[in-house]
Length: 185
Image (tube, rainbow, N blue to C red; front, side, top):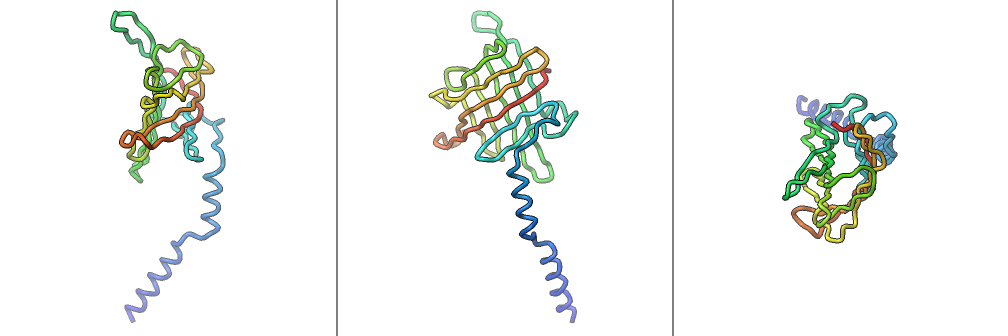
């Protein structure tokens, strides 16, 4: 009798926890909807493999270390100073042990304009996606770019279209497109 009750109880729990088709359809529809960026003070929106993700996904007043931009003074070998713009964003979900990070740097930054990415340009994008590192500095064709559309020394806004290569297998590539709006720290 106890065995029969256990089987019935386990069956009820199993069927109660099984996702219904209606719920699965709603979830996939929600995932395909474009992300609305109007409610974000700062963001990096990335389109990859027909999916969207947003860095700095906490609405209004997210943790400052997770997303931002910084203008850094660097020096050429002969001592002349120049500026480098560094952009970063990160997502971490400790309950699922998932981590994603994106970072980019523009060497010899001069404000609004289009900056090519790749081997010889010095401008690059690094993307860490669930345990795999992807880098744009392996791009010998310099086919990618970062476009700065707004720069006022407090805010940087723009878009990008970058080809990144798997750090472990350079034959694997992904195309990252998107936009960003960040406060300069």
